[in-house]
Length: 358
Image (tube, rainbow, N blue to C red; front, top):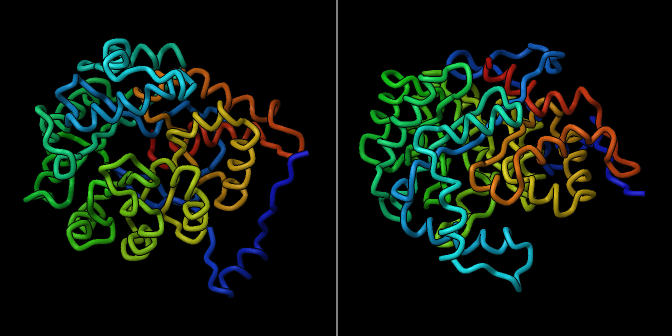
């Protein structure tokens, strides 16, 4: 039998009293961001929503260093055995054509095949850290916005803007007010803190516009700097921008998930998504169930959004498989760990449907 800790309100209060910190989540943003508090968490007609996905038009959309990282790191995961590492060249030739999707055709086809009702498309701005890509972040933001405007019932666009860019506020304002972008994507591991001065200048404005932010949390490959993506930095942001809705992408991954859960419990404006957790779900299913159960018990199920981080992850673990892993949790979870159908529906889309008004 797998034994997991039980977190109660009494534990939470004691934790606060001892200065240990704790864990939570509810939403109050208005359009174009989040709905208000008090909406039903569990909807019988919940949709399947991918809350974190990328569109990559071609190799020119990514800095060369990032292309090299993807090819070298994912070659191991695809093979499933470090001793059978595929060369970067082999990986590029075999798998990169499956990632490039300038018109979103592969994405929409996958959504139909898997039954995904809506997808949140995000752009990542790595220009300052890894060098500018041939297709600029601004052009990518416009392309993703155009695609979302073409399929407004299927796609939602989040722009990527490094707050250190000159006129970052004006860049984001154009994305929101002229292109119809619904949110901001942060990648602070590119070399800046989300609670830093430049970030705050941008966050102040998007809070005024009612626009949420998805910010990367958790480890990432060098030469990026993971310390800037530690979720504890979001404590300042949540406190200083109480009306800004924040989604911790990857929920800090498996190293820092508990920090995200603790923060979500005490901050009503913080969510976490499960993008990238499919590798754990397949590789160590009992451990995945244990962590997810604890995450729900600490933060509340309404704080957790299903997400993929596709198209890259779809190469390693088909999205359809990840959906089925979540859907069958009530039947397949190890002895001693229980999930309800209501919890599964909330994670797979009910929370995003309620929170993002989708």
